[in-house]
Image (cartoon, rainbow, N blue to C red; front, side):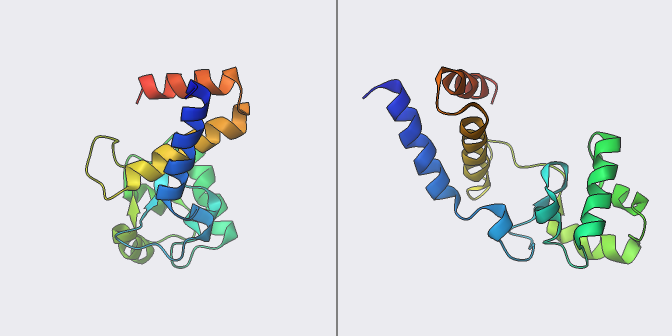
Length: 139
């Protein structure tokens, strides 16, 4: 089997194993948290009380900080108080789990997302294969 075909097969398998895309998931939970330093606006909206404007404000702060070092940094967002942070604490994590940890499949979902993003960015070409190889080496 050619290398390109193997990569496509692995990518498809990973996407299937990863389950639904983040935009189709329901509310955040302790077992399906929002990863603050990697979240999109749609993912942030999974948190209770977060609509489009508050999600955008969180993303602006994240861009300004580079990343959230602590969950409490959310207090710097206008309109977010201690009560909201206390409610969100069990529903958020700062970063995605490491690929070598036992995280109940979250690392597979992250890997599938990275593969899909590489294919979308580069198309399925030699550039895509190189990007996938680089990502694999640096995982």
